[in-house]
Image 1 (tube, rainbow, N blue to C red):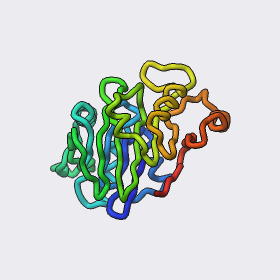
Image 2: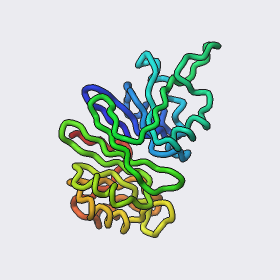
Image 3: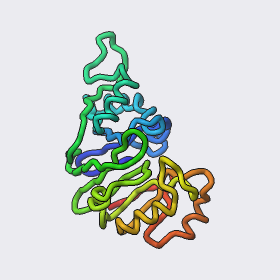
Image 4: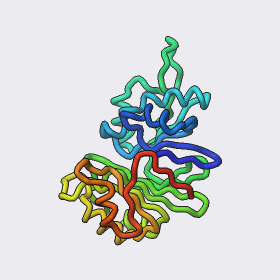
Length: 219
């Protein structure tokens, strides 16, 4: 997910095809990275953030919960916040462990507890009166998280497949959660190959849509 405001631009997670995505979408600015968790499909494109160090002309902060940041630093052990003395072209990152709300530019970011694997953090983004919930991988969430997300303008949430799954929400579980959150508009992501876009969307409530690659929302 790429977020851009007048003051800052940031990305949430860096998937294995991160480089191709930023090329396809013409992304030329990234001021920060937020991580939800350290599974391979969410972090393995991280090395390619180095191009944005060059564009920015300095270190880029990367935010995440303690477990996630420790895992990312272990996997990308060569990444630090100082240039290589040998002149090697490596990402320059300031890792920031977060447990409380923080700011990226003028966007207020609230980390949210979510159940998925060993550790997963969702995010509530608030900017200029708009509230956006982002929970890409989810098997459930505590009542406290649901309360924080209630009545958001946009809710982006996991809906893996029709059948139950031990680590992800199935469609019925997602719709039940969305009924509690009552967002103005919701978008389903992280869909399995056995869910046809048009067929799925035709059976959804009017306030729930199916996402797709390259989807852009302007608030």
